[in-house]
Length: 581
Figure 1 (spheres, rainbow, N blue to C red):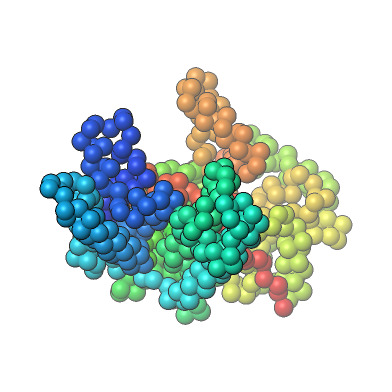
Figure 2 (figure 1 turned 180 degrees about the horizontal axis):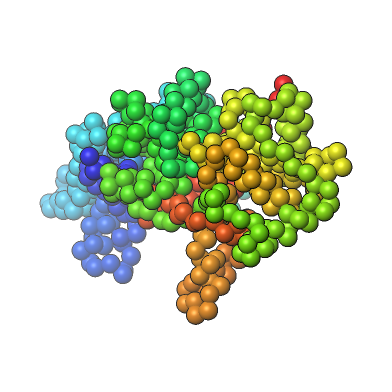
């Protein structure tokens, strides 16, 4: 298959480059003396006729072209519509302008065709022809529901800006060479929004510059925000249907995965893409124009490439940037083989094998001491499947989990289920600690394959002793010995290798610098503390990866991941722990 992630066909990219060149030439970038003489001559001639009328109009059109060029590169249909309309307008106005200039020179004994801007005429015509010929390349899906909202937004922002422009001109009406009539006030405001001077000049140059710059700013605001809204990527509010959830549960049961994140694909705020044969699926969410697959694909590994193909096709249809977050090395190799994407190790998952865990060994001294500290304070633990909990127990645990939650949005996406003590998850395991008849801490684990658990939620009361989490994990491990559970996945440690290598004797300057940066960031986001907590249990570290089309997309993908994980504001994903009846 070898379909490159978000691969752009050649024509849209070339047209986008031409639009950027046109944008730069309109504002006179190629006319500066640093460029060779030929470039300056051609660049000066590329400035369209309409932009020679006023520098303000040149700025508005240049900004519009630059915004449209990005949409063209992503093959967005609306960008093609806007580009075609704008090029047609520029071309028609250039023809009329040059026809007028030609007629005004028809008595001259010698006509210099270079004076008529032949270069920019040819350029605009070429771009327009390219847009028309390659129109089928711009086939991304548009959201029909946003057309009306975009149109009403344009009317609203134009109305408000025009009202502000009227106020500016009205209060400056005494600063013109003669007092303006009501009609002239309206005319000056309208022309000012498109960067054209009004019918009456100001009495002072400084006053005229100030007023025209304010009106130009309003015009730019209208153009930029309207085009930006029209070209924004299609957004999708994810919601897992009952049918999809049931089918995915069957896949998870039929094809037990080595990926501890498989069960988290059943979050309520994820969507799913299926292979055509229905034997593999990919859970994903869309945010910030990025479609993010979390964890490994589900189902038969032999059918993963078919699901990946559908995933990439869906991304191309909507001009979304495809990315994968938190996949294993096995899945990462398949993704890279099928899509030629780039990969980056982002951290390690801590896995404890039950048969190897002996709390009495010297290596686990820290865990033993913390657990014993909690026991001395009278802490007792219980561990049950959700299906074994009574209604009162589920309600009490859910109430305390909600009370102990710190912060705003519920964090976690790829490694969190987003619901607690829910009968949708009968095989999930809950461990909780009680002291003096009061709840002090709790953990929830989701199933992992046929013989594993994966940590989903960890909460504790504000007045609990510091060893309650160690006690709960140790108790869950002992529960696992009895119930034929062989492995438990704990927290994910972001950039674990940097923390480990940065502490070693002889660490290189780059490693030490990266280590110091992560230590600084850990003041705001739990990274070092999670690594050190996980390390107490002497786990096996399994690396996790993110995949993205190219290094140029990494920044946008990183922001999308931070938003979907709720480390950055995310208004589109609000999910909290459900109340239990």
